[in-house]
Amino acid sequence: MRSKQRLYHRPKNFGRELRVADFIRVELTDLLRNKMRDPRVNVSDVSISDVKVSRDLAYADVYVAWHGASDNAPEEELLSVMQNAAGFFRSELAQRHSMRTTPELRFHFDRTEAEAQRIEELLARARRP
Image (cartoon, rainbow, N blue to C red; front, top):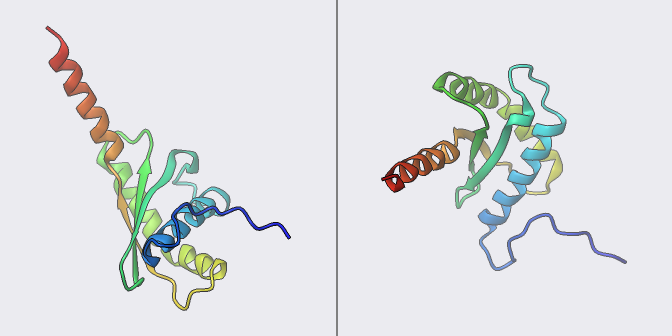
């Protein structure tokens, strides 16, 4: 019998919270792409960049990136939409795993891409004579 290909890339010796975080990241990405039907969010512009789960598995901090967002208004709207859909996401996650409880999802905006672009611009300015 052929074994299923592992979607979660961390070895077994990592803590359980890291494996759960990988599971949540992969499954939320799938839910976002295939089941979220909110017209305010263009799912092709949104990605789950990171998930951090508390050691007791009670909370999962989900970091969401919105590609192409230029001001803070879309960030607030995205976080509002995602937080309103947290119950839906949590119930869908509960159906996809066999853990006793499903972590409560808390959404945060990931500004890594914008910060990286800002640093690149500063470096480019510094290199110019």
